[in-house]
Length: 455
Image (cartoon, rainbow, N blue to C red):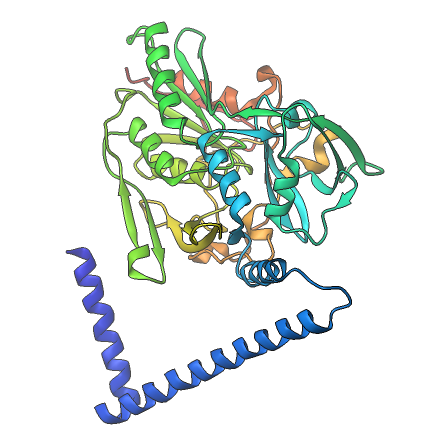
């Protein structure tokens, strides 16, 4: 009923505008036909220009070019002019993407994006060659095996980093606080992304770390909750910490099913695009495995995409308290469009994500209820923040007045030792009956107040 009402309202407005601009149905038809013809002529003119350039390159270039590479280069150029997340994948790239979403592939274990023609690390995946080598969020990769990144597409660079297990790869990395580029030699492994880790904390809290959203995430979360409930008696269990920090996202259906595992019912996320079919609502299904126990969700500048969907849904339904720093702001939908046998696929941005309250995630991110800044060691201070979606050239704008004046940076540093992790300490306090002031910059420096702990 709601979609029908909205459609009627928009139709009414459009009719009123046409009435003001055009005096007769016949005149309106002629004007619209003329505009359509002009657009068609312009499109054909541009396609003729492309064909002319293509033929000139084929006939006059100093060496005989490969036609397929010319076409693929043209497609990549067209798609890269749209936004940072739309991309064309050739057959090999498409196959490798499918491997990644299954949760197993040969490579290094890093989530990357492209910025100013270079590869920037969003986050290393836990327990992979990249994380063990010390690669961190914000690192910029400039060369792979002495081949410069400049001029490659994102998929080309990613494909070079993937490869046969036990083979070695050399990366050249730039860090803001380093006097010169850092050379790293890393041995590839089969990356089996174990997206969920967990443990019982202090006999009363379940800690669950979700590092990515692949096809195994919901199953892993359900196992984590089940095991924690076996380890901690229900009358002792005060709640759960869901750690989404530096989680770069992944599959939308996993974000929906993860949220469904943590709350009983309600909208999880909606998508809005230019085409009617891109406007969809996704709702929770399956029931709350935590049996209504309190939740604290940890987010930071490296929490992106599916992570932001989960955090936003749990927050808007007042199902969880968010602690940490503002998330990355990757709130756009990429639809995968297979292009036929041998032609690969297109990942095309088709819509924006919105939380249940109507908040646009794109470029804006998710703000925590309690902001907690970590104490960052001197050697990490220049790369403790990640700029986020709003800093990426060509990014889509969010929808909402809060985008004006929004800063680009958000802290993404997570201390390796839990005893130094202020956000985690604040989460434990929250669940044990201590509420940190919502404006706290430092969880340990503000007055706290007691509250009853629900069972």
